[in-house]
Image 1: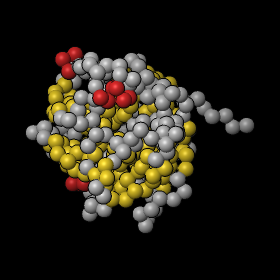
Image 2: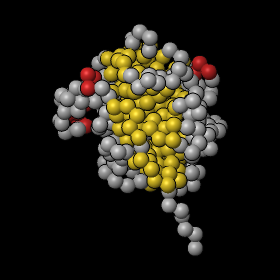
Image 3: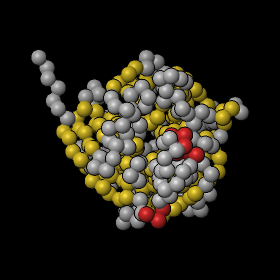
Length: 307
């Protein structure tokens, strides 16, 4: 009889909490809709590193983007009328943001100016975009989550090609969230939060998807959120309902589990450090950045300028 080996369990360290001067313990439209009106002083998401080792994170309810330096000092890069979530670099000076309120937005990190990038599809507003990733050819994959769930499985997965063509690849997802690509770019992993699982989406040579399957099944009150892939092709899965980050092999078997020491809202993650073996995770309810050492370096992220 084959017995699956239990995963190694470890606890995250607290790398940097949000300074008190940036916290806003007030009601917001976002908190009214997503936290039952309870005041939320911040809700961090979208971690991504620049080439100098600065970590950028978004703050959804207050429309803010922060930069955290290697010295762990926080600075406000932008504040605008939006609800920013996932972020990836378009080039060395601009971040592309999935903004629930406004669609895709571009942020000039030097000036703090935020401008529309793709606000609508065929003059129709998105449901509420959530996360994004570029492939090696410059195609952008992003999720349109809105308030979809098992009661309303109408969330979407889009691909925006470099020539501007927008393809809807999936339109039947109960809460599509984080996205990640396999090292060869032939498989997209899709976090399905309200389905409490991760889908495996094969990307075909003709641009279509085929034989989409359920790769990993989780449990708890809130399912998978942010995703990342390491150089060995292992998948990291944030689970904000449990306060976990899973490290799964190619068969979706858990190899490692990191647990949050602060709360249960481990929402998204990014690889950083000189050897790219440190995992930095947003713990959104406490407003802190967690960190842990991973067995393998993270897969390098593509952006259009370098594709």
